[in-house]
Image 1 (tube, rainbow, N blue to C red):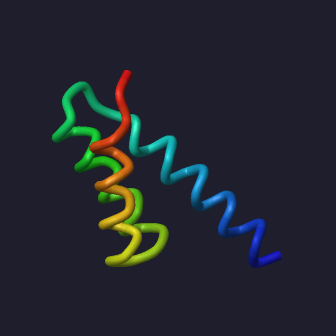
Image 2: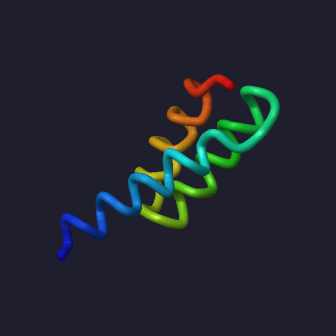
Image 3: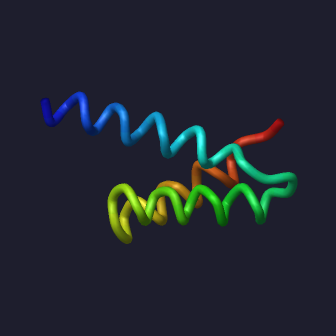
Length: 55
């Protein structure tokens, strides 16, 4: 059950990381999403994922 929750949280993190028009916006939305899901470590991971995504 815990693995399923982590997979779902990771999917939400990746989908939120792609929100925004610029690299800064994607990093910000990814950081906020990561913070809500996994705390400070999630915020750093979300910001990195958001900055790395392109449309």
